Length: 426
Image 1 (cartoon, helix red, strand yellow):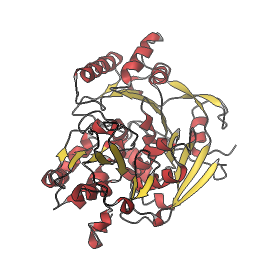
Image 2 (cartoon, rainbow, N blue to C red; image 1 turned 60 degrees about the vertical axis):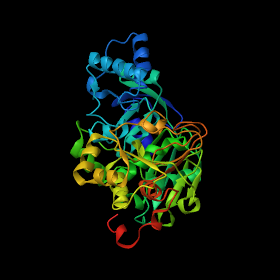
Image 3 (cartoon, rainbow, N blue to C red; image 1 turned 90 degrees about the horizontal axis):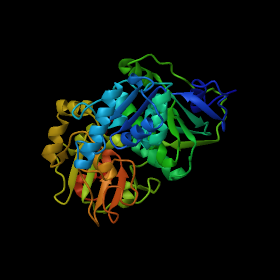
């Protein structure tokens, strides 16, 4: 039976038929939670009578959401998670050595092509960048995966998305995914799997691909998976902690839907309140004042995001009316930014630079919004109250739009500030 990539990965991990619409039991390659979702998973683990995790080297807890601890409750949660991880001998990294889970785990070579990855966080789908079936689940299901090393899935239909054409240097992965969400909306891929390909992917940096896969769930998708290519295999071989076997779709696979996006026609995009699918051109929103710009999160806190923003901010100042918060997504990214001088550029521009944390993305800490305030964020969600007060507003965009907006104090197409040689090599 010809298979799509998501179906092929599930079929490789089960003795069941794994036809679309089937419920099948699958082996899990990696299972993780964070400081917020781990405590309920730990309780469920105890309640089901489990004594040990199926493989300590394939189970992890990452303290990244309310850490460094924002208050006593956060400190208690982190302590419980830390104690459980040590008791089980499972993977755990302390503050100062960790990062936002969806950026950090691929860096550590723990998510690999052909894997099935489950995490108690909806943006686990980021791992699909590497050709893995990576998906979020509730803490109770995650507890069962920790105990058994398996879980179950209803094999989803697959929507094939092909990004075609030549990308302009001011277009990033954020523009790719916002264009898709603008097309299908936040429920257009509900419980489907997105399979990404097309000619434009070949020249799209991996950091940008992580942005695309990360926001697959904003379209309702169960997973968002890129077909592995040379760049993915090189990344996995260089970092992988274990062997892997990449899996590919069959050429004659049948898809529930096919979508083609011409990236050559794209302009810098923004998702306006209060939906990731409320896509607008940045130029269309010019003049919309903001009080805060946030560069970071599991969506756009990687090195290329920092590089693009630093290049635009170099020699410029953040507008007096704006607070700009920059949070590299991992210590690897933080250290490389320091080595390359990006942190100096951010600080000299008047931005606040923070230790890796999810922080403001989910309204946790390090950048909460007051009533009536607007934020242009490189994160993934802009629902009502997502980053603070329910009467605040969040706009979503890529790092270039974010940096340009920080300088002007209002939503800005980066082409208004830079031109010519600036774009060479991007």
